[in-house]
Amino acid sequence: MHIIEQSLLDNLHCYADKTIYVAYSGGVDSQALLFGLSRLKQQQLITNQIIACHIHHGLSKNADSWQQFCQQQAVQLGVEFITARVDIDIESKSSLEALAREARYQSIQSLTPASSIILTGHHLDDQTETFLLALKRGAGVAGLSAMKSSTMLFERQVVRPLLDVSRKTIELYASSYELEFIDDESNIDENFDRNFIRHSVIPVISERWPSFTKTVARTAHNCQQTQILLDDLASKDLETIESTDESLSVEPLLSLSKERFNNLVIYFLKRRFGTTPSSSQLEQIKQQMLSPLDRMPEIVLGDVVVRRFKQTLYFTKHFQDISDWRWSSHRDDAFADTHLITLPDNLGEVGIGLSVTPQNNAALHQVRPPNSNQQVSIRFSHNNPKCHPENRAHRTSLKKVLKELNIAPWQRKRVPFVYYDEALVAVLGHFVCKEFKPDENSTKLTINYSFSQDSR
Image (cartoon, rainbow, N blue to C red):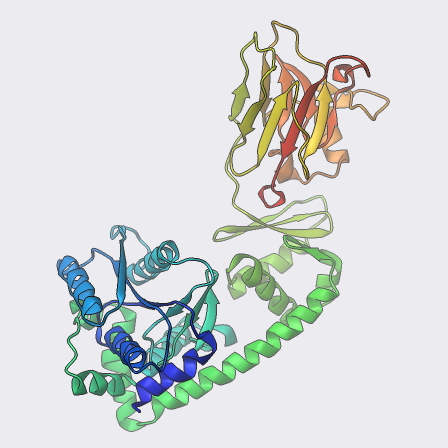
């Protein structure tokens, strides 16, 4: 049995009978992969359903014909074919390689169900290129681990069964079966870093050291083993630190050495948000934590914001400015029917009416109904009015109440307020103003506030 087909068998034995989606560009690597799978299926060595998954990038004038070719090849091999077209902003300042890769990821997500098994044609030479690109960036152990033979990506199992097979072996396999395949003209453009490494760097090194790609693969594997140990250490450190899915306690963090601090924060951010901070960003995080407690620093890490409030470090997503958002009722609304209001920026829902059914995991408030000429509104802005919370003895400013409730500053901008005209009625999730509390036997307007903790 050919090494390619044996590698496929070895990597698929634990996925028996599961549908396999093949990332299929029509290039020699994915063509050999799909052909090898179809041969195993014909020989009844595997029983998996095979689906070829093609992404039409639209970056080449040949993209339409490539899609037709891939579909024809799938039909000839008796394989189901699915495709998606993506639009890439070539005017963007981002790397075209990165944009195309991200577009592929998003499209594969849209084409495949969660928990899918996705096979790619990455091989030994791809591993060397990935390693050298990481080395160029000054990556740490995680980056130098390059690609794993199997990994979870966007809730899908991505398997790279040819990662120990060289490009030359794949090309010889394709030639021996006279396989047709697409030769993408962009693969020779050395303006792309990966192509430069492929055509101008690796051949020179391999001429001097023929086993270089295998040696790099061994180094990447060693880095993967080291990363497992680092993750294990971070997991144990995390057990000693008071934490939630979005926060870490500052004091025990500061007791760690610089190296263990960095390792833990990297582990936490990667596991929670899929992002890895740079060395300078890690230094910023630690320095900001040491700033005086009356300061509330913020550090932006791509799509994540790190904030400190008192003795806790919070990691949140970017939030929209919702200060101008407002929902208002009609002045003559009797609220016999329940209003269901979707709040902005994934902040949840508010149900308001005279016959609202209480919801599990929702904040429930009851207030006296508005007068017939009063308008009810929900907003996120206020002019710091004096208010009298139901559980307090005296009136005080709203800002002071929110601060005393230990609500973090950024969360205070995301708390919904209920008004009758310009009078503050309730702070949802926290309290009703005393003058709007209904008598025990009187009619009550019920407000359900269901929210996502991640959005606050």
